[in-house]
Structures are given as structure tokens and as C-alpha cells.
Image 1: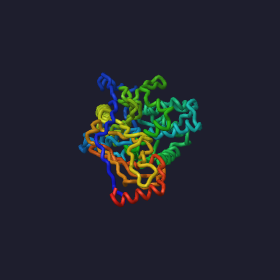
Image 2 (image 1 turned 180 degrees about the vertical axis):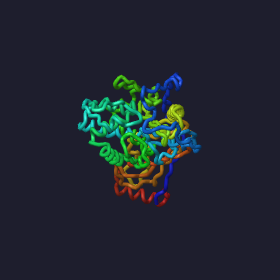
Image 3 (image 1 turned 120 degrees about the vertical axis):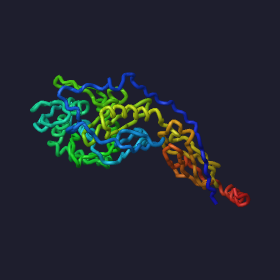
Image 4 (image 1 turned 90 degrees about the horizontal axis):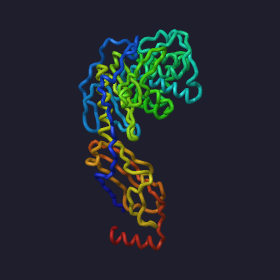
Amino acid sequence: MNIPRRLLLSGVAIMLAAPAFARPHKPVHEAWPKKAPGADEEEGGPDTGTGPAATGTPANTPLGPMDTSAKWAVIVDFNTGATLLDKDADVEMPPSSMTKLMTAYIVYSKLKAGTLSLTQTLPVSEHAWRTQGSKMFVELGGQIPVEQLIRGMIIQSGNDACIVLAEGIAGSEEQFVEMMNATGKSIGLTHSVFRNCTGWPDPAHHMSVRDIATLAKRIIQDFPEYYHYDAEKTFTYHGIVQYNRNPLVQRGMADGLKTGHTEAGGFGVVGSAEHNGRRVIMVLNGMPTQHARIEESVRLMGWAFANFENVTLFSANDVVENAPVYLGARRTVPLVGGHDLKLTMPRAWRQHAHIAITYDSPVPAPIRAGDVIGKLTVSGQGVPQSEVALLAGEDVGRMALPGRAVAVVSRLLTGV
């Protein structure tokens, strides 16, 4: 009869260097650029100077509740997918100009497929020329290279640049929006419906901050050759210098991705930064003022790096345990995870983590490498709950008949 065996490990001694997160010494308000001449500071639709009131409900984190002036918020680890902060992350909300990341994703996919090129020029229609909100200031009837339009879309948040790209790719903005919705579904955006390519206010146009974080990850992952546009701090078109509105990019604390602002959506930001090999993606929206966007984005990005680390508990072929074997040609079989187990942990995780290895012991022979033998479970206060199957690391055949007979008799007499 098999005897359940449970091994409990606590305080595993895996030490990683804490990632440094340097902040520029320049005060936040000095780093924010002046408004470009003639540019609407709003990024999506008309602004009345108000926004959604900040709610008093705190965000959820592995470390406990955390206050934020953002109405919707999510912070995720790029490598492990762990959620570090969540405030109504799956609630549908107005994404404003953060919508432009979906437009950019399609543009980048066309570039990668070879059906569009950076040097190709696209015509400016009257619809694009007349569009309101934040603008690149395209000229009616002009022909503009795709690369300049990308910069106008990402850095200047130009609604007009988006429409030129949409019409150049799909023939009309309406047909491009159909592509946006189809592509969004294909990459796992479950709370997103697009009605335009710019983020211009529309009651039926919405995303969730988690969907935006998913989209941001796909841009970084799928199109690294184009992601550098997000880190550019200024772009000049027709003699008009405009500055990237992303406060994290302006301060050198992130390499992307976008901001947004409408009356319904408030002030929003999508930021991503990498330090010491660890990347974090943050999406905040619904902040009441531009100043709140600056303060919250700087504070929460710093918090994400200062309070969490990525820990490799074991690599694919590491022997996690040697399990005793019954009637086997070998006395034990090594148990392995079969893949690297990397988790995002609070920095004090060693004080709270419990790692349990569970399997039926002894394991009856014969055993084939790759057979599922047991499981490893990670739990604890602030530690993400994880469960990994443990596999046999090697083949173990049955022992010869005389040996099996002796082992059976011994087990009957001793119960072991």
C-alpha cells in the first residue's frame, strides 16, 4: 500500500540582487515639456478641464491594499505574467489615446509582413486633415512617409497621423477599425471594442487596463525592431516641435509606451521599463489631473521595482527530490520540474514562502522518464500560488524476479 509522502520546505535560500531603480534628480514638474504651438493638450477628444473623480477604493496587491488616484490600474511583470497591482483591471473604460497602441500593432504587423515599408508615402485625405484633438499637423493632399506617421502617432499622439495610416492600410478608417477588432480578439483582448483608430470619445469604444497591458506586451514581444519609437522624447514635423507626453519616458524611467486623456477617461499612461533584466508594464487611467498622472506613474513604477523580484526556484533539469522506488532496479528516481520555475515574489518572500512537494511513496516500478510522479506547490503570504507537476527524470526498470520476491516479503513483514 502506498504511503503518501509530503515534504515541506520553507525559507528557500535563493538570493537575487535587488534591482536598482535610479530616479533623475530633476523635479517632476521641470521634466514636463511645454505644449507645442497650436497643439491641443487633450489626446483623443474635447476637454472641459475635468475628469472622472478619483475613487477611494484601494488597489489590490500581494502586499495588501494600496491607495492610488487612478480609477483603473494594473501592473504586471513582463516575464512571469504576475499581477503586482490591480484596481478594476478588467472593467471596460474609455482608453482615450491609449487606443493608438492597437493602431500601432497593426501598422507594425504590416511592416513585418512586408506589405508596408517605412519609406512608403501615404496620402493625406480631407478626413485626416480635418480631425481634431492632438495633431501631427499633416497637410491636406500631402504624401507622408510611414516612418514619420509612426512618430507622429506615438510621440505626438497625432489623431491625424493615425487616420492617414488607417486609410493607407485599409482604404478607410471604418475598414481599419474592423481589422482592429479582429486583431484584438486574436491576441486575447477580451474587454475591448474599437470604434475608431484614435481613441476619440465614443460610448461604444472601450478597453480594460489589463487588455492594454496585454497589447503593450505583444508590441514589445512581437515587434522589438519598431519599439524604439516609443522611447523618443521629441519629434519635429513642419517645424513644429512636440514632446512625448509620457512622463516616465521624459524622465528616462521607461522606454514606452503611450498616454491618453479625454474627459470621460481622465488622464492615463502606459509605461514599460526594464532594469537588471526584469521588465514591468504599468497601465493607469482615470487620474483627475496631468499632475496626478506624473506623480502616480513615477511613484507606482518605482514601487513595482523596489518591492518585487523575480526568483528562479529551479531550472528545468534540476533534481527537486529523489523519490524512493518500489521493486525498481534503482532505489530512487529523480524528480524534475521539466521547465524553469520563475516567479515574481515580494522581496521579503523568504520569510513567508512555503514550498511543498507531494507524491505517493514509494513509487512503483517500472517508471519512464517524463512520467508525472507528484507536484510542487508554492504558497504563503504575498507569494503567488503556484503548482508545478514533478516528472520522473530518468527511466527506472523493475528489479529481477528474485529481488522482487525478497522485496515483497520484506514489505509484508516490516510494512516498509
